[in-house]
Length: 192
Image (cartoon, rainbow, N blue to C red):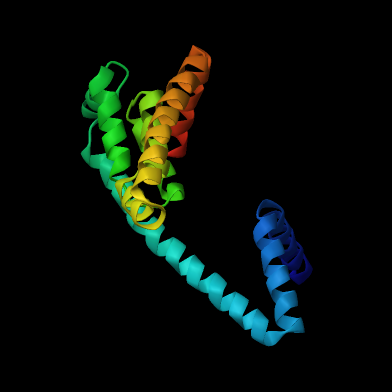
């Protein structure tokens, strides 16, 4: 009986290790560094722990707000604001919403999923993500102070062009089947 239990535990651990191989590899490297040089190993562990906590404290509010957005904003409102027939108003809304965000890019992906789930136009979601990643107002302010106003404005204008061009080109390149698959994946990946 005990042997069967150990076999099941080992099989479960093997499946977890296979699925999360990168995490297992990182843990093994951490342990090796800790064994060979404990001071460096402790520094690595403190750094990893600090970054993991930072990651968790950033993602929890984002997931909470994403969940609230999913519940509070009905589909019809989202479709009207940035849906397929929203036109220029939807493009501007997505662009401005992206410009004022100040969260890391990885935290924006769940928001993009919710926007797709609520029926937003794919190009508007791409504009939102692109503007959030490269055209944010906080980034522009920091860049102006660090690299100069002229550089910041030049990069800002180039990125505006790039975000809009990429968003519309990607949407035009997608077939109806591709778009349906994207919306279906968004529906499946964001729990009800």
